Image (cartoon, rainbow, N blue to C red; front, side, top):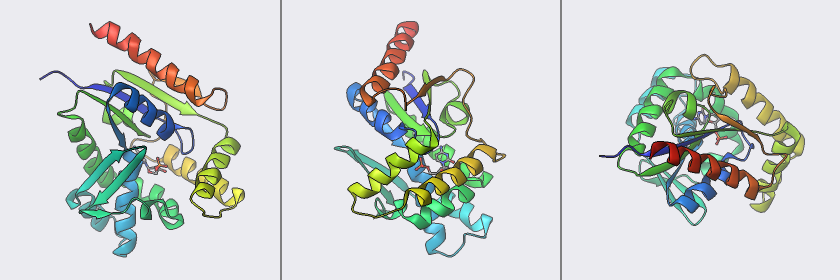
Length: 227
Ligand code: DC
């Protein structure tokens, strides 16, 4: 079996990971995986089952739940235990609790295991998250780390909510992003950090097309190296 070609895209919320990861996957015909959706799905279950304060129960949920990500026409449908939670995992409540839940070591171990399995049997994958290039696939063929100014990231999120007809204030979004950045970057297990060999792109300084082209160029270079 040939080894899958893995493109790891990491960065904070709103840095443009989903937008560029989806387009790169589409251009290359690779599988696109949004790992944030997995942490969100477990957080949603923990809220519903009222176990947010019981780490062992949350770990059990992460170990035993079946998470499916079905991507088609620009949208990742997220299913947990066969239930469609695509919309529910983007709620304000999930936004609030997802970072504390993602800090739990056992939750991370369970989800990282699922993420590695997803890469098997696929020629190529584009996986986005916080720890893909550092922990999930430290040997990824291409590692990208996206950044953008907090004001820009918050504005992007407000626009996404607007498009869905949900009214949110810029301040509320900004404070949620700052809070998540802080927890995600300072946690003990696999914090959000740039892998030493990742290529950093500030997406406030380039267009989406340029972002995608930068990643595709790294892919070309890595492919040439492999051959
Ligand atoms: O990408 P996102 O904003 O949907 O991710 C939601 C949260 O999930 C994020 O604030 C931290 C967590 N997460 C993580 O800890 N590790 C990942 N690989 C992906 C997401």
